[in-house]
Length: 68
Picture 1: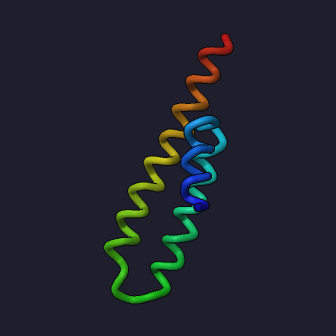
Picture 2: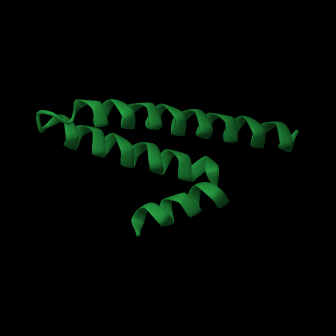
């Protein structure tokens, strides 16, 4: 349920939602690294977190360009 809400937040407010999703993924990564054997999933989530951060930066640049 929370993932659906985060997805909707990204859809309607990507400048905020992308950072929320990136923080969420960072928490998942930390959790996965505390258990052995889940390093491949942690690496996948790291890639998703980098993508979320890139989306946040793109959304900020787009908002800045649209404002001028």
